[in-house]
Image 1 (spheres, rainbow, N blue to C red):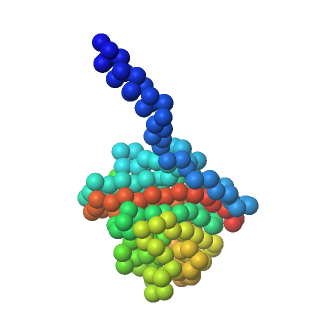
Image 2 (cartoon, rainbow, N blue to C red):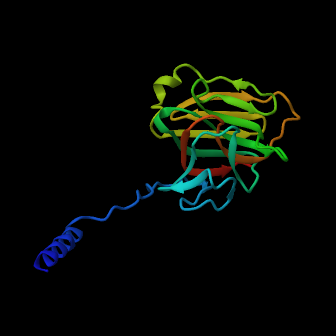
Image 3 (cartoon, rainbow, N blue to C red):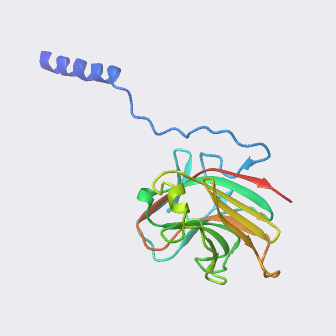
Length: 214
């Protein structure tokens, strides 16, 4: 019995001196004047999609794919026209393919979205792609982007859409300045985050905020 009492006392002492493991806390940041958050940092309010793939961890929206056959998107429930969107993203080990849809729509009865994509991933970093529509890169990022980003760390992404003009920026480098020549291309739509087919991959998005320009 004395040995049992000694063991219990020892374990109790460890609990007193050993800090309990805590989940990583979201990093606080100041939202710029005129911007409002699109993500509250704690749940997916204002977003819709497959919650078996998309979740919230440590103040970030996380797309964690074991490997999927089709692209998957988490989309806003509101539509946006002219805006400036700012956020940070991070790809696990800098590998995989993702992107941010804007002025986009879900294709009925399909897994895909149609519209502009601010691209993320090998060979596509900082490019403007036209998802499910013209299916091509509309504007290529400059080669100096490779020196402007650390692909495995958090990267700032700015997307500005105003009228026919689209500007993309990663960190402090403008990667795209594009004027849409087709007047019939939609000027409003959903914003969405992508996990590309293939994998596995993990992509995180945080500090998502928007300023309306119209």
